[in-house]
Length: 252
Image (cartoon, rainbow, N blue to C red; front, side, top):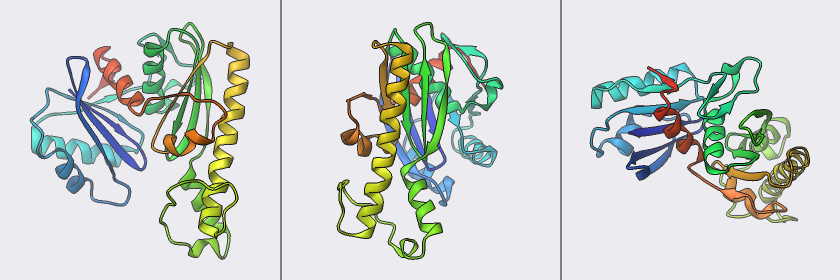
């Protein structure tokens, strides 16, 4: 089974066999031709038994996925559809379908990797934080801008920062000696401080046994700045997609 985590910036994928991932990868798809990227990433793979997708990038990309898969593998993907409950997790949203499929999959995966309460942080295009109680009831969540989004906001609303090159510095300096590094430092510390505070409040509400899991493309950048070390699981969403696929919580 091929599993896809399709975000606003990146497509992550893995092939599951015998309860483990036999291969995996990712590509940055924003403002690039999806068909060419997919062919480069998947063109050499054998035809999978099926494809299950968690997509938060909108219907246009769903059509691109459908077209590529039909043309190359003669298959029809299934898509995670968020509901009121699945795989031991109860959705807290008043409108269950408003919760992103990636967050739903991450909640399901967290429920299966830790038996008690959990806090799930996803550091992608946006930073999302969700909480689960010990009975698998979603307590709700929050959404904040991710690092690149905060950098873009500074670029749009200031005169000098907008002219900076887009290259990312290799690390984070507390007090930088250049504007580009200062921006990276500022947004990184802003994000990590927010995460620290929210997690502390969630642990206070759910109890000291609350396990914190972190995933997403910017997780490694933020981990050194956090006041504690959560469990880092880059494949958390894909693991949840696999569980939901087995639970038949998806639709073509």
